[in-house]
Length: 205
Image (tube, rainbow, N blue to C red; front, side, top):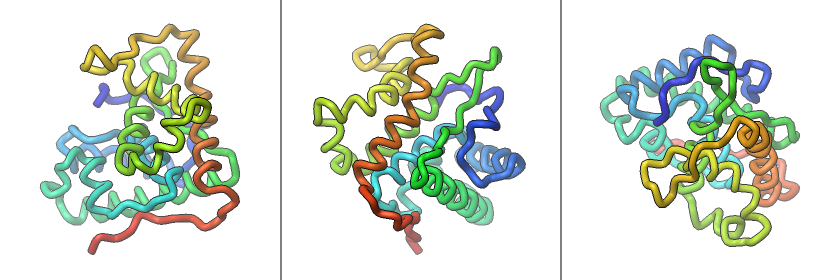
């Protein structure tokens, strides 16, 4: 994961979580994965991909991904609290996407600039959980453009040089960031059509 964030844009958060709950979920994400799993920004992107893809994931599957496959080492009571907060956050994303007012959780750097790398990283990880579901978008010449902002930011600092997109200028970043929500909403409408039946993470117990 990228370094931990400096600050969040409170005016651009589509979640029913309070500021205290956002801080708590961030702390739980760190403690349950020994600081190796996703942060809140990456979790937001991950859950967005799951919600948009319209296919629920078993709790064991998404927790393993979110916590870098270290969920078995966490305290059960912390895992339960984390799942409850994640479910609340997920419901907020579902509601926001359904009504077309989603804005991502984006952390800012020390200069107050939203970077979006962690969100995009989480989103791509979420897509990869059900990659075959996303192929009608990924393999389509026009629809695949919806995902270009996600891949550009997710791979900006990729350790694999063959995948790395390279650093974005401030001007380019300011153009890419708004397209995250736009691309997500287009994918959501593509998968969901006119459906208004919210999905939930499914229990594995």
